[in-house]
Amino acid sequence: MKFERFLSAVSKARKPSPIRMATALMLRSPPSTISLGGGSPNPCTFPFRKLYVEISNGTNIRIEGKEMDRALQYSQSDGIPELKDWLKRIQKHFHQPPLMNDSNENELDLCVTVGSQDGLTKVFEMLLSPGDNMLLDDPNYPGSLAFLQPLPINLLPVDTDEFGMKSSSLREALSAWKPSDVLNPNSDIPKVLYTIPNCGNPTGASASTGRKLEIYKIAREYDLIIVEDDPYYFLQFNETVAPSYQQLDTDGRVIRSDSMSKVLSSGMRLGWISGAKPFIDRLVLHQQATLLHNSTLIQMLVWKLLEKWKLEGFQKHLKETKTFYESQKNVMIESANKWLTGLAEWNVPQGGMFLWIKLLGIDDTTELIQKRAMEKEIILIPGSAFSVKENVKSSYCRASFSLSSPENIDEGIRRLAELVREELDRKHK
Ligand code: 09M
Image 1 (cartoon, rainbow, N blue to C red):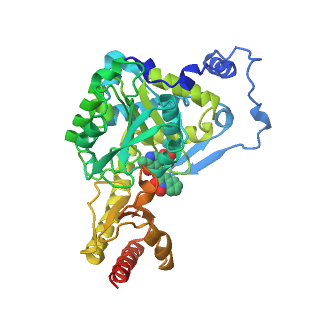
Image 2 (cartoon, rainbow, N blue to C red):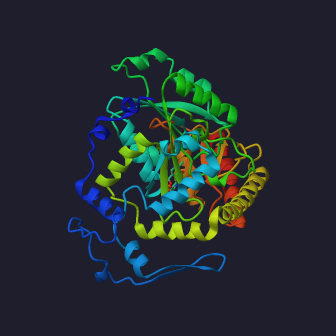
Image 3 (cartoon, rainbow, N blue to C red):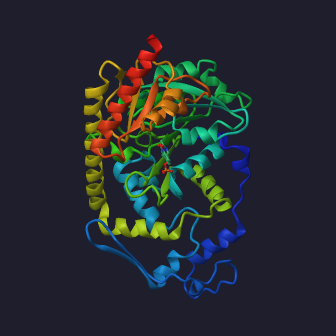
């Protein structure tokens, strides 16, 4: 693949930072090396001494002495090597990326980011230039839309259904171009396809293997980069799950975003971007120029947790986490069946944290949810908040089953049903 074709002018112009190179050099050098080059503060002046963290099985993680000095210090922009090794092992286990097979182990690289939000915005900056056309799921995650909508680019919404992005809608969105336009450097043919393949936010939809194969085929035909935003990957309820786009990718056209937010901690802010090395190299230059690196302390904590748990312990934790969310989902579906039958429609999510509810007979839920729902003391997100194009009406709302108790889920859905009834009564008066 010609990676250059996809890089924005800003990304192409990024150069390695000489001071960050000095830090990287020092970290790789023998202990006898004397560095007068780095701008790192001396940790002997830092007030923190030791960190003991109790984890859920009653054991401890300890960071002290030299390790504490390290945890409090600047570190590599792409992440500390021990954590990167673990994340690569996780990547290999769950996705068996063809780009990471035994003969070309280093073709796929990864970069630790501050949650997937940070990584995604950097990927977008790397790939998008003013005037570009970009394809993306509609509806979509407002956090990404908040970054994308103000950019001087044209967003091309692609319809989704219960199996995620529709390949027919993708073909339609691309019908203004032909695959051979790829050869014309002045063509405005889209280069980027952004999708949330599993337990989508807001729809809860997961793309089937068939769908993914169709989408990947189109991506090859039109030479598209697929940005695979998959923070709910670990929250898929079924034992067998569809392969990720990264697993299907033999070309290096998939840039994948993962996150520990939904399984270890969202406040900790740890995610990672993986993809073909030429892309990750560019991303690391962006890291060098913005946040320098994710917190060394947090990275060490997660590395030590994974070191303690091993892959088996991580999987056991994932299983427990999924069991929790599945049971929460069951409560919400039961409540929806009880209270909303005849008033609303929904698909049962195969994972994640969201139920996407279509309120029947209501063209736009925005005012209902933003004003009248508040009067009933229930908070939901109106469908319009997820629309790629601004000021679009939506009959949907997003209900999250992640945080409320089973009793409150049931009461919340009951209040929603009451609200819909009152609204329909009001309309028919
Ligand atoms: N609501 C997310 N989604 C969300 C949300 C959130 C505060 C976050 C998709 O933690 P990160 O950076 O790894 O996650 C970012 C992210 C990326 N991609 C598809 C996501 O759903 C997180 C944070 C308040 C509300 C929030 O509602 O949906």
